[in-house]
Each structure stands twice: as structure tokens, then as C-alpha cells.
Image 1 (cartoon, rainbow, N blue to C red):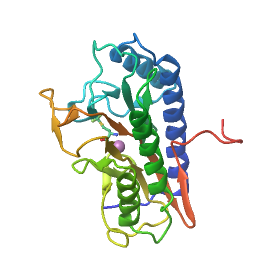
Image 2 (tube, rainbow, N blue to C red):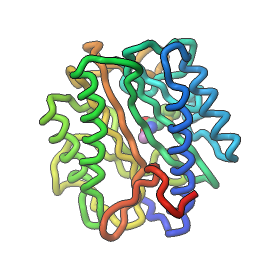
Image 3 (cartoon, protein in one colour):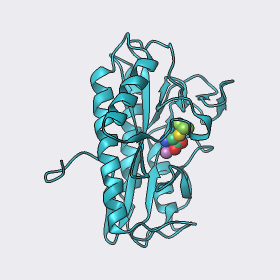
Image 4 (cartoon, rainbow, N blue to C red):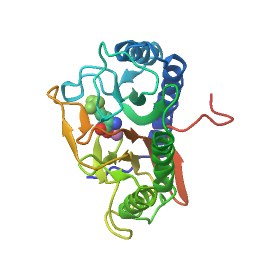
Length: 254
Ligand code: MF3
Ligand code: CO
């Protein structure tokens, strides 16, 4: 079942999205070589809870932390721990924030210090692939329009698309219908309606698309050990386009 949110619900989800954005900004301030992933998790937990909000991921299906921190060959769902971040690391930060029971989901990938050009391009082009996907969102468009835009952009830039993990609806649960794959055919799939809210989240690899899961039952890694990048926004469908609920704060919003 795909839920349609009222204007009031979209407002609440934007509130959650704004705090999600601010939490990302807070993490960005602290992200540098020498910090542990557990310290980043703690910063996010303290920031979110001090704003009377809830970290959506904490205890979600047993997930043991507030954010996911996935480094280099880790694609998504890296569990924060004692691991120290080093210069040249590709670090994906995924954050979920809930306010009044409404969730928001957003991810960014950073390079700490310097990295080879192809790695910089992996990160830049994954963010651009997300924006290509978002640009297709409006009432009447199909999920496949988003999927194919992401896939085409990725392939045009020599990147492979992780297929086992997909974007999703967002609302009173962090994961709702429909699935939003990062590959597919334009003109196919669910038709978007104003009031739907979806998380679009390309996971693109520098090498091959194949992945495996670590023994921790969460962390997803690339088979070939090459780096992966992940960007995600929670996006509301409107009559004539979209609103990025986890996007930067505009004039008139606090
Ligand atoms: N953004 C992640 C996703 O959609 C959220 C993961 S929830 C977690 O898959 F609990 F697994 F971290
Ligand atoms: Co998500």
C-alpha cells in the first residue's frame, strides 16, 4: 500500500528532513582523519535527541546504532564502532530522523583528505545520479523514469549500479512501499501521485556491481573491494514536480 500524505503530514516530514539536514551538517564538521565511527554516531545521537527527535535507525530490525557509516568498499549499513577514519577514505554517512512519528532518510558520501581522480568522480557522479533521478519526480511520472535516469547516468560515467538494495517510500515507517530501484525502464512501474514521499538512493560502484554481506549481518561490501558511494534524499511528489524534504534550508524556514 502506498500512502498519500496530507499537507500537514508533509510539513511534519519536512521538519524531520530539516533536522536530518542539520545532523548531516553537524557530522560534516567533525568528519576528519583520526575520529572513530562510534564518535560520529554519538555526535548524531546527541544532536538528534537534544532536538526532541528520534534516530530512526536505532533498534530498527535490531540495528545497533543511530547512523550508518560505510567506508571505502563498504556500500551501505556499516555499523559504527572502534574503526578510525583515515586520510583518503571514502565515507558514506546515512541518517534517519523522526519527529512526531514521521521519518526522514538521507545519505551523503565524503572523501576525507585526498583521493585519486576516479574516486572523486565516483562520489561527484553518484550525487549527480541522485539529482538526475529526482529531476524526473512529478505527479504522473513513473518510478521507472527515476530508475532509468539513475542507471543511464551511472553507466554513462562508467559506474555500476548495486541492484539488491533500493530506494523506498517513507512516512510513519522508515521503509514503506513502493520500491525505488536504481535501474529499470522509463515508462514502467508505479505512477507517482502528489503526496507520495519516496527516498531515492543510488549506490554506485567504481568496479563491478556485485556485493556481499559481512558476518555482522548488516554491512554490505563490494565483491571486488573497490570503493562505492551512496547519496539519498527523501522527496515529496507534488503536482508539478517535487520537494526535497531533506534538502538545504530555504529562506523562511528556520
Ligand atoms: N537509508 C537506509 C536504507 O534505506 C536505512 C537503513 S536503516 C538501518 O536502507 F537500520 F538499517 F540502518
Ligand atoms: Co533509505
